[in-house]
Length: 90
Image (cartoon, rainbow, N blue to C red; front, side, top):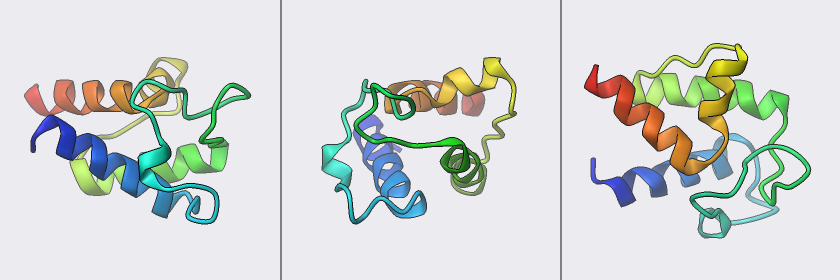
């Protein structure tokens, strides 16, 4: 999958699977902005993190553990894409 297609798909999945359709569109999500925390426009929380981990496993075969090391991969669209590419290359 091409890089921009992958980013678009991730954004669309986040909006739908994390139930953000009433708050934003996938186009509102910037590639490098934080997805979680007080500085996030997306405003994902811990339940959304679980949902996102499930989505990544179902759609890309990527397993995300609950450790701090693994959570950094969910920081932004760019970090998720980098993790997907790394895991699929190995």
